[in-house]
Length: 205
Image 1 (cartoon, rainbow, N blue to C red):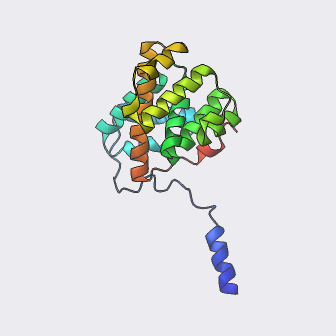
Image 2: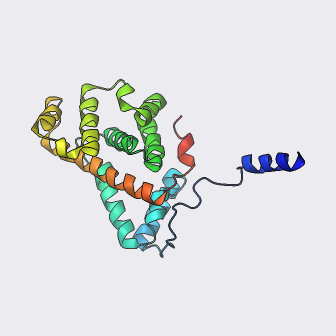
């Protein structure tokens, strides 16, 4: 009995273990950070309080890390007809379809923070169709998920549906680009068992 009790205590005592160690399941030692990436990591730490694990995952190769950061910042932060919240909603809807643990945790937190609505964040993670979305948001997410699940079925009717709720052709490009980017990152995260920073779980709740 004593042995059983000890084993149970050991199995349930996770206080000293972080869920994101190791960050990925591949043995890829980090390379020395370039000056630009060292500054970027420092900026993340100052702004967020931590460096997102996706950046650490790419840090074995500076060319790949810098390329990822450039594309991410362009798609998610640069001026666009899509708001930052709308872009994060696309990230979560795509990641929900793909069951990507990393992106659902990280970008679900971003939806909660940008919307100020924890319920919306949870609805987006589980099933965006359960959320009370505007016609614009619903059309945008329907398109992004169709592009994720069955891209060969997309035709002019789908683009027309986006134009009908006010999206420009440039906006349609941006919707498609964000959806395509997260389909790539979802697959890479799943292939490597990329682990989200535990800090994301408690954010904006």
